[in-house]
Image 1 (cartoon, rainbow, N blue to C red):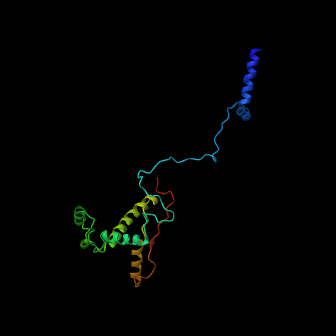
Image 2 (cartoon, rainbow, N blue to C red):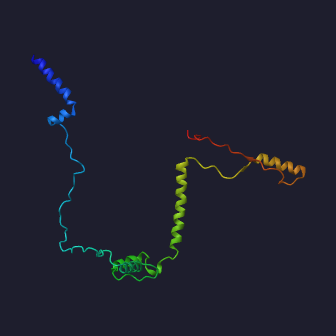
Image 3 (cartoon, rainbow, N blue to C red):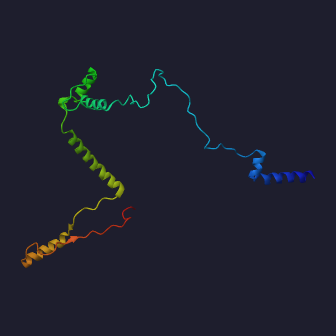
Length: 188
């Protein structure tokens, strides 16, 4: 009798373990939080400088300034950076001035055609890298351009024209026809 009761209890437990409502009734179900009700709160902290004035609504941001001040900063920054004929900046140390002078970045040593020089060097580098890219992408040597004259047939044509007393340019020039390679030809 005890064995039958034990088997009946185990069978009932196995059957009930598959039922979600039974698990909820026993307290074994999952109760995840509602993702729409979860709110994260940022930690409360004070800025490191306690003397900051509170922002005023509608006031311009202090780092931006007025448009006139921004324009002045843009013009003065460009003239102090060493443009053509620019004087050394007042706030540069003697070490910075010596470094700029030894690097040739003072007003008199600036090459006015530097953009053309840089463009020429960049185009040469681009051409070299293009051939590398072509070799990687197309993985075979490009076909030579133009047509190739068949030398034996051309010699025969010239001799026939000479024997007949015709000009050398009479007749069609014989060329070698290249056959097209198959897609996978030359891989293996």
